[in-house]
Image (cartoon, rainbow, N blue to C red; front, side, top):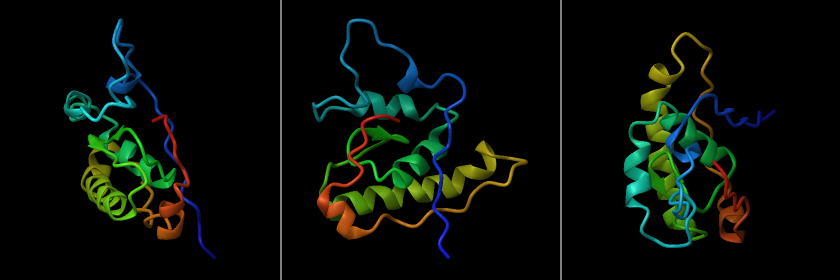
Length: 123
């Protein structure tokens, strides 16, 4: 029996949840220049869990865990997910110390990625 991973709830302030007055949302902007958003993620205490959530939700767009997702290109998306899961593995002891941290989830099915399933636009 396969257990489905559940996304983490965001508790507390994070860079992506802080309103930017008079500016477009850099985390889910339609524009490709998301470097500033990705850099802001690096100080976030939710960094590893955010990447975990991107994989669990099969997100295809936006900046998650400091990584700008490439859209529905399956090979590029699988590479981004691999980076995010490696980051989660490295950070889960820091971010989830003293808890029963869930293991690294499997990559989403490649057929689902090619169909663009999970086009989530919210971290």
